[in-house]
Every structure is written in structure tokens, then in C-alpha cells.
Length: 315
Image 1: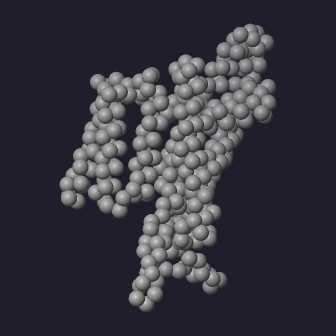
Image 2 (image 1 turned 180 degrees about the vertical axis):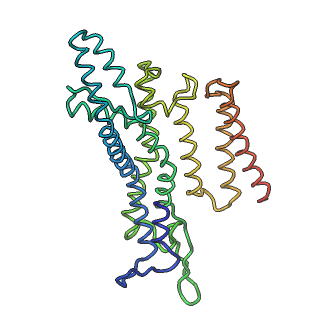
């Protein structure tokens, strides 16, 4: 939806709105940058809102069933508090779509109900942030990378002035005018979202691993997306993969050399380094005769030979 909306705003020429005023392509690009910066904030909020609406609808539809369960627990409480606690815990673990707990005790406060719902949202928000991570990283880097051009002045082109223009939007002069603010915004977004999301995820997993809580059901429910499928000693490997993605996206947007073959060499270096890392560690668990390790190895091998093949074509 974001890409479609920004494509509507941007164009090769000036767009004219219904009131007859013009909107330049650079303005649309800056708007896209702001929206991209806001996506990691907006998406979790919208996801939480729609999840709350869905859960509320489900609870209203099951109101009679919930009331019957609560009455059953009340009768159990009179006969045996231990029995009531047993059934209460069983009912509390029932989840809608395996995500949201929909049963609450009649004595639960609104704060307790809200706290349970927000805890259930942690896993969804983590998946959401990692899903949009690549798009946000690319968007932030597009607002930063500039290229130098020779600007010839005078009728005989006697004076040559070196100017820097935004690579994604060449009519924008870098770090002057409007771009000074948006360049700062892009750098902040890159640090907070592109580097910050994997860093915070690593820190949370490190705390859980240090406390030996990675096998805890609650921890798996919240953070299992980040380490399920890996060997216990390689709980951090999903973060390593996202570091690889950030490096690849960085070199895609920040061409360290104008020579395409030179850029491909950087890709080759990244591919080889992570291929060696994988061969030395084999971080995935050993289910199905190391199927996951073999699949990742073949994927990295295809990536490496694809880059090598491209370099041979460009020679």
C-alpha cells in the first residue's frame, strides 16, 4: 500500500492536484521518507488496534460460553480452591488463532486484562517489525546516499564545480535546504530502526539466554520467532542474518565505487564471509537430517555463484 501510494505521488514530471497547485517529485520523495520512517510506529499501533477489535468481537460472540465457564469456576471455588485454580489456568491458556488469550477470570481487573492482551501482542509486533525491517532500511538509505557530479559553468565551461545530488532524487542538492532536515531524519531512522531493532532483539534474547529461560513456554510464545529452529547455542543467529541483510542493503544503496564490478566484489565478500560462517557453525537444528542447514547452505551457494557469474559477464 505504501509503495502504491508513493508511486501515485511521484512521477517523472510535475503533478498537478485538483486545486491547480504543483507538487514536485522531490516533495513526494520527502513525504515517502517520512512515511517510511513512521511505518515501524504506525504498523504495530494499527496491528494492536485491529487485534483488539478482533478479540473483542470474539469475546462478545462467546459471551455465553465465557459466562458459563466463570460460573463453573465459581462453583469449583466453593468446593475446592485447588480445583478452581487448576481449571482457571487451563481456561486461561485457550487462545484465539493460537495468539490471543480470550478467557479472563471474573475478578480480573481491567489493567490485568490489558496486560495479558499486550503480552500476547509482543510476538506479533516482533514479526511485524522484522517483516518491514528491510523496506525501512532501504527507504532510510535512499534518503542519505548522495553522488558527486561535475557542474560546468560559463560559456566555455572554464569553471568546473563539484556538486553532490541525492542519488534517488537527482534534483535535490545534498545536505542543503530541505534535504538537511530529511538527511538527519534518515540517519536517525537508520540508527533506530535498521540497527536498533536487531540490537534490541539481541539484547532481549541475551537476557533470556543468560537466565536460561529460552525453553520457558512464556519466552517461546513471545520471542520464539527469533530463535526457534536454531541450535540452543546459536539463539542469536537470526540477528546475524539481519546483519547480513543490512550490509547487503547498505552496499546496494551506498555504492562504494562507481565501477559495477567493484560493487559486485563487495557483494561477493559478504556472500563468502557468511558462507564460511555457516559452514563453520551450522546453526540450525538437526531435524530431518540437518535439512535446514543444507537448505541455507544451498541458498548461500546459489547467491555466491550468481554474483560470480555476474562478475564474469561484466569482465
